Length: 151
Image 1 (spheres, rainbow, N blue to C red):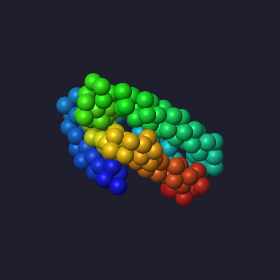
Image 2: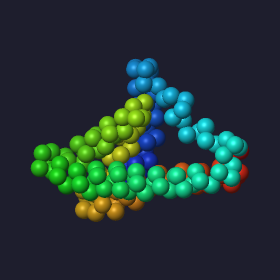
Image 3: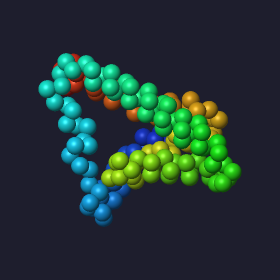
Image 4: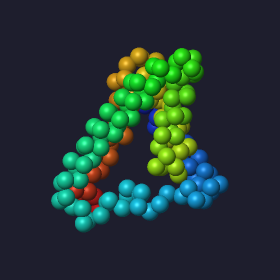
């Protein structure tokens, strides 16, 4: 539970950091094509293939990609270099890995501390899978758009 709270709290607090970051470096503003809000459009109603794409994304990106690589493979090996602060180094590396979302680096890093901490604390990859899986709420939003429930 503390890992989920750290993830949510870090995400909310970091929104202002993201704004400060992009104000300081205006070239790092979020491009319009990267805003997922544009998918909440009536033209996508009934396009159920998008749900398959979103579920594939969850499986291969979240579970097999990010979680297995960063918290299952890298985190245990980082202890030799970073000692007891390996989970902090892993979190920063995980945030910087999201270079395709450079406008959100501050929130990526601050909201990800719960992932690595949970794996380190409970010695189980499943803890970070559960914490990161909370972000899977977007599947509900995808279904709402596809079903026409979202304006």
